[in-house]
Length: 218
Image (cartoon, rainbow, N blue to C red; front, side, top):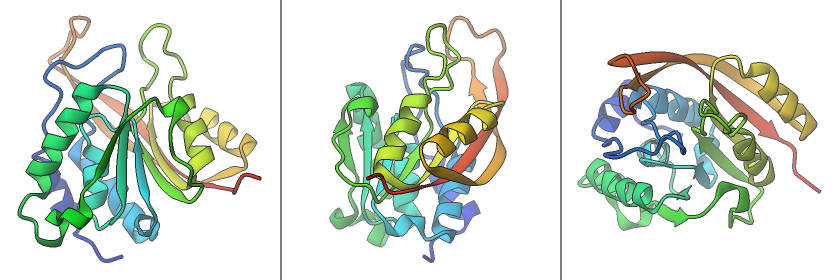
């Protein structure tokens, strides 16, 4: 699939607005535009945007919008937070408005309210994109597991972003669920000071990104 360059995609994603009042319990952070562009550019090179694309825990809509801008024609974003979905819709209008084919109503993103662990998707052939919670908050350890479980149910391929040190867990989970990690890379994830427990103006986490090919479930 021929889409915009990674650099062009990142520049267009810079218009995506962050949460005005993010929830620490939901670990609501803006996925960096550079990282979203890298992920979706790779997905385009792998022809993974030819399938239906589903952004699990879409938040601001960054990954869903990135996929649409990169050329995906069927995109859905799901989130449990109605305020996040309202923001995602506004970000879609801002990012896609007046962009030719990318702004056509036929390319509109489907926004759904729902819990990832009880998702409404019946497909097993989707491409899943997701920046799940890193599990940094107390009581939220391995919060990303539910997102991998959902991906294993509905995806032929998934791209997920995790906290540093997650490779053993992700590879083990994928293997147990009949999947295989085909690509893994590290990426910087800037975290601005948004919550009262943050002490620095901005911190940069070392995130890990994984592409997993999932075997069809019986």
